[in-house]
Amino acid sequence: MKNKFVKSLISLVIIGTCLFGGCVTPPTSNNSSSSDNNENESVNLITPNEFIKSIEEVGAVTGRNSPWNDTITGALVCGTDLGIPVYDSKNERMLLLYGDTFSGQKAGQGSGYNDWRSNVCAYSTDFNLSDGLTLDGWITRGGREMAKELVPSNKTDNYEMTTIPTGAIEINGAIYMFYMSVRHWGANGEWWVSYCGLTKSVDGGENYKRVEGVAFTGIKDNITAELTGYEPSVVVSHYAPGLCQVYPLAVGEYVYLYGIQGGRFDGVQLARVKANDIENFDAYEYFTGVDENKNPLFVQGSAGIKYISSEENKQKTQIIPGPAGEMCVMYNNYLGKYMTIYQMGQQMVMRTADNPWGEWSKTITLFGYETYNAMYCGFMHEKYTEQNGKIVYFMMSYWWDYESLLMKLELQ
Image (cartoon, rainbow, N blue to C red; front, side, top):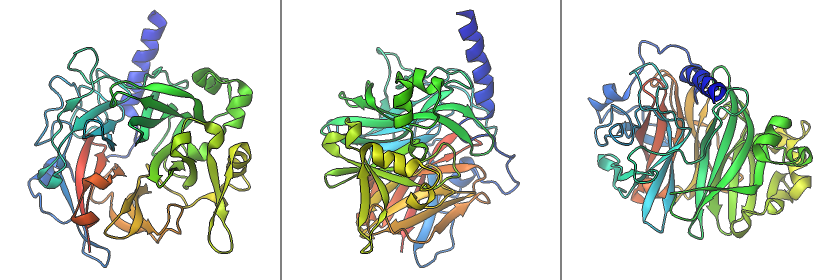
């Protein structure tokens, strides 16, 4: 017991320094913060161009700077990030999945302290985001107020530091959430993932159970075998480092899985599976390229996963080149195209494509570190749009105040 306590205490010190964003450089003098921008809510962060009319910060959804939500009292959510939206049709609400979460946070210092949970979830029935996003409550345990950890983690550095959601989707009333098991945080934007797992909730996101057969492994060793419960041969056969952070998107009968390695420096790979087969790992198919007519080529099962994970084929099977961090993709009715927002180095960028696999347009820069030093993520959802997709709201994480910001993007 004492050893476990010491390990957890050491881990808390480490994660307070290098959490989901990795270690970051000090903020620059022209760094923006949510409290700064809330004084000028209508400030356009971009010079209008042929693609984008405006980008505005609406405000903080979590933390001490939120004008709409007290996430600290009761829920004990002061410092947190992400805010991945997934629709819960049973309860007609949006679930918002957050990463490493703390009850305390010092403004402008990043991360947090006390009551560390690797992941938490809020819910909201507010779909009019023009005046902000009001949360209805949090998923808790046994009637307690504190937001609970959905997917437990060992919280031991160089073993399993934390378990963080990367994307989720509803299929036949069940919520399926992908998460990454982070072994160790590195320098800026670097971390190592043992595996990407899948969990399932049949009660509206209240409780999750791991789908034992579905995992993409990122490190082929005994630690990954212990964490997954797989035999070493299975760890090897599931090896797909390019799918260590998976974001799912439903398109027709398929769920497309957009994946990146641990960290924010590699390119994007693609897999897919029929929605009804999401719990059958052997049914997953892997994108290997396009034919002469630009039709997509997918290879199913072990042959496909082996192909895309080889050093020889890794880069040529990437649908978007690196660097790419925290992928999110949705279909935009206004554009009549798929759109993605992700971090590319020190910029937040957008691309569009006619098909889930591409071909993706050139990058369109939204803003960079000169506007928000150490920002990351850009999570969208079709239900968080207006005017048929002309206006897109997305969640962006801001490291220094360690909070989730609601952003508003208006297309031309």
